[in-house]
Amino acid sequence: MELMNSFLNLVVPPASLVILAFSWPALSFINACEWIYNSFNIENMEDKVVIITGASSGIGEQIAYEYAKRKANLMLVARRENRLRIISENARAMGAKRVLIMAADVVKEDDCRRFVSETVNILGRVDHLVNTASLGHTFYFEEVTDTSIFPHLMDINFWGNVYPTLVALPYLHQSNGRVIVNASVETWLPLPRMSLYSASKAALVNFYETLRFEVKDDVGITIATHGWIGSQMTRGKFMVEDGAEMQRKEEREVHVTGGPVEEFAKLIVSGACRGNIYVKYPSWYDIFLLYRMFAPNILNWTFRLLLSGNGSRRTSLVGTGMPVYEASGSGSGSGSGRLVLEGASPRRLLLAPNSPQSLQAQKLE
Image 1 (cartoon, one colour):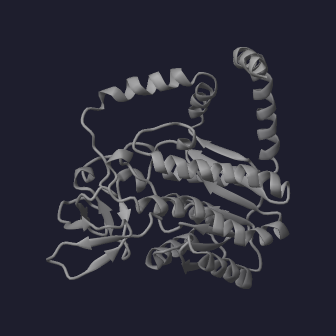
Image 2 (cartoon, rainbow, N blue to C red; image 1 turned 30 degrees about the vertical axis):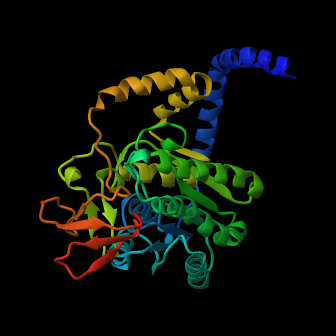
Image 3 (cartoon, one colour; image 1 turned 90 degrees about the vertical axis):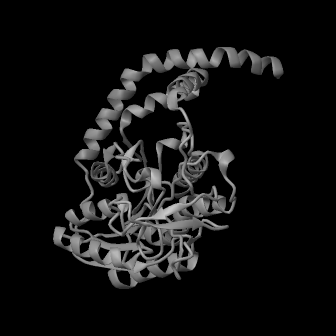
């Protein structure tokens, strides 16, 4: 058996590359035909019901607007009710038939049951469940001094998708509905300072890939993966209980470049309505997947070369016990924020002694 495995190790990778090279034109043609067919069978979302978690900002907010333009009925879910009220008004102005909002925590099963039940009781059904709540980081793993951040990241990025899906599945079966998942290219593309985020997103993708086989054709699943986009997460902001933003001081004046969130949200909703199982932005990232599967050493050498000139480390302060700063609610980065010291847990950020308040950290929504 060992001899057979050794032989296959030598033969299968190059043979697979040759087969892939010859079959690529045919596969591209099939994909093009499938795309054209799906384009003529776009789901009409008018009067249908969409639940969007993490809808108070970023991708979730923009997805709400895209469904609103399609005249869907919306249930917007996040922790910040004040933000949801603003977004609900915007969605109505853009064409949404009815918009419900609910302040809820997606990592709590009871909260998930509450907003799904409320949706069904008022709107009668669930057609699309869009999971966008997510929490990122930019620290080096070896610099972490507070390991309580580990389950916090997994709670939001993994269980914060699983619980709403579990509760909504019976209603999605009834409507032959769809689950839309906000994943990331980091599920298979190794990037420094994102180890835990990548691991949680990889777990998420593997969960939904398996669930796809379990639900068969009764419920569709669209997995959206994105590269670098200009969102709150990439601008170094962290949300706190009252909706203010947390930034490390060095990141205030950094102008992040990346694809617009609006464009990615439009691709997600269009892909979901076409019944696509994947939405990728930008699609050229796929080439790195081939390298990872068939030539991992080349990918490793390339990344080491590209990252070797980074110089000194600049890392997120969350989880490292270093001070961060509270910016104004507008996130203007004017430098007038108050010093915030990070406590033993990333869930509680304590204000400096000159302030009597304390703020409980909230996931990025």
